Structures are given as C-alpha cells and as structure tokens.
Image (cartoon, rainbow, N blue to C red; front, top):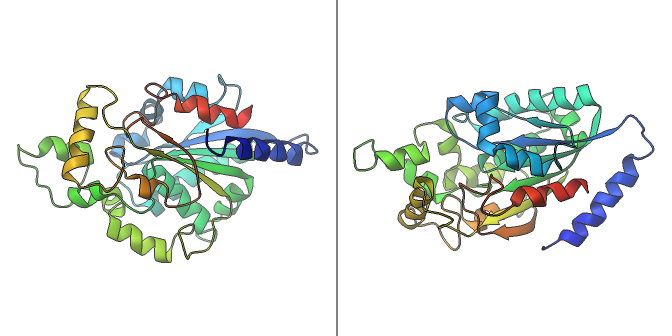
Length: 277
C-alpha cells in the first residue's frame, strides 16, 4: 500500500516518543460527514460508520475511541465547535496524547477548520497537540461538483431522489461547493498549495469506484457522477483531485462514497487499524 512503509516508521517514532510518559495513552476518533440533523445523535453517528468499521479501525476494540456526532447540516465552524467539545473531553478524561482522527467526507473539512484556526476556540490547541495525525477519507477539500449541482435542484418529483441524496438545502452542502471551498482554502484553511502547512500530518484516501453493488445508494452515486460532471476519477460524490487536495495520499480505493465509510466492499477499516499495530 502506498506510503505504508513511511507510515509504519512514523508509528514507531510516535510510540518511542510517548513511551517515557507512563500515563499517556493512544486513542482513535471518528468524525462523520454532512447529512441531516439526526447525525447529532450518537447512535445515528455510530451507524453512519457501522460497527464493523469501528471494530476494525480500533483493532477489535483494543484502542480507546470516541465517535463524534454533530448536526450534519451545519457549517464547518459550527460543526467543529461541537466536535471539539467531544474530542477535548475524550482527550482529557483518558489522558490521550497520541490521537488518530479518522474522518469521512465533510468531516475532513470540519477537522481542517480546527487545525487551521487554533485560536478560534480554547479547546483547539489541546486537540491539535494530542493528535498524531488525521486520516481523511473522501474529503471535499477543494469542494464537490455534486454540491454545486445541489444548489440548482428543485424538489420536483423528477429530482426529489437526487435532492434527498445530496441533502442540498442546508449550510454544510453550500460549504462544500467548489467556489466556497476555493474561498476558504485561500483564507481560513491551511494545507492547500500556497497556504500555511497544517500543524499535523493529514493522510488522504480517495475513491475512484462507482458500481460497488446494485443498492439504491450506489445507483444514485453512479448517476450523480455523470450528471454533476465530476472531473477525472471520483467516488460518486467527491472527485479524487479534491480528496487529495491536501496532505499526503495514503491510498486510493474502489469503494464509492457510500462504502468508503464502511468495512465491507473494500476493508478500509482494516487499513485504519494498522495505525495501532
């Protein structure tokens, strides 16, 4: 797997770094993407990732973890403040100083807000300092043409299924539009070309598959890929150029946007779990 050897060396380095501090601990965090208000519920956020994804990513529950949950309609800075409260409590209560944050889709942008704006909230520096690195799966770091399309759709019977898929009538989807992300990448966010570097490493996972199976979500993503005009390879919601727009590429996956937050079509959770081996 691309960059796996380098990542393994970094894991060894961090283990040696924290070894003298006997009270230190490793932890994992999971930050979901955009959606609706139900994602503010812990159980809904858990199901977003699925039990097997969380199990595999934590090496069969061996690593302490927190599943963050926030209203999936919010702007990145609003969501970030909610997530920061949960991360901060997890870090302090468990004495975490080696945190790996796993994000999916818009969750990667939410975490970038925290790491790009340490003075925004008093909890942000503690989170940044405790983090080893961030794994961002299919993050729309340069926006999504699917979000651009969402702003042009009506709720007619002909497009209602697409409206539902895109969740277009809220702040998070507008936040993901390519023009909005171009502005934020030039002003508020770190990590893109010509901007300050992020204070911790971000490892990207991008998707280039569409037809993983024939469920309704997969058919919708394959259709969306075509009508939204996503450039180059994409996972049905986010093009690879955007997912790889920051940090270092860890690997590409054929799992589409529906499956790359799970551990089924491609066992991405098994890969995330190698951070703790």
